Image (tube, rainbow, N blue to C red):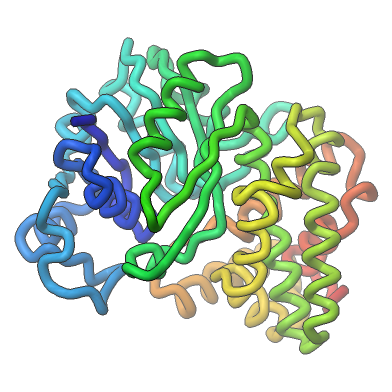
Length: 346
C-alpha cells in the first residue's frame, strides 16, 4: 500500500484525498490542513463544512487522517500532492523546505498559478524547484476540467492529464504511480511528457475565463463567448512560443488539461462569474482600484475562497510585455486592460 500525503485541505485537495482513499491503492491518506480546527473536524466528525456543507457526517472518517503538523504529514510519505492556493504558494514552500531536505519524494501539483520570473513566466513547477533547495525529487502536474463537488458523486465521471518533464525517468515513473492510484471507474487520467504545457494550460485558461465572464457580464451573448473561447485556445500556445517556453501544441487542443479544462472553466468556473460581476461595476479608476474590486468580489462571491484567475491575468500580461509580444495575444492583453487599466469593455 502506497503512503500518500495531500498538502492542502481546500476543495480540490480534499476531493483528491477522498478519491485516493476510495481507489484502495493507498495506505491511510494523510491530509495536511492549515488550521488545527479543520484537521480536528475531519478526524472527529468526518466532515469539512467549510467546503462541503451538504455532505453527510462521517464521509471523511474512514481512510483519511488529517493533521496540521506539516513535518508529521510528510514524514515517510512516498508521494506528495500539492494543493495549496496559488497566492499562498511561496510562503507554504518556505515551511515545507526543511521537511524535504535531501528527499527525493515526487510532488504532483494541483496548483494553477503563474508568476513573472526573470524574463520568462514561471509555472508552479519552476517555483517549487526554486524554493525547495535540497529537495531532489521530480515535479509533476495534474490538469483537467473538474467540478470538485461532482467528482464525489457515484454516477459522475472526470478526466485529467498527469504531466512530467520530458526526459525525466523519475518523473515518468512517478506519473505512472499517480495514474495507477487515481484511475477508477469515476476518474480517467492520461500521462504526457509536457509539464510546462499542462501547467500553462491550467494557468492561462483562468485568464480566458475572465474574458468569457466580461462578455457575459456585458450581455454580449453566447456567440461572443464562443468566439472568446476559440481565441483563447489559439493564444495559449502562442503565449508559450512568445515567451520561449517549450510546449506541445496538442496539449492545448487535445488534452483534458487543455481544451477540456478551458471549456469547463469558461462555462461554469468561479472566475467567469467573478469577472461578470467585475465588469458590471464599470471601468476601474486605477490598478489599485482594480485590485481592491477583485478582492472585494472574491470575498463576497466566494466566501473567502481564493482563486488564481485575476492574479494570472496580471502575470500573463507582464510576461508578454517583457518580451514585447502583447500584440501577438490580443485577448490576453484585453483581459488585462479591462481588468486592471480601466477600459469599459472589449
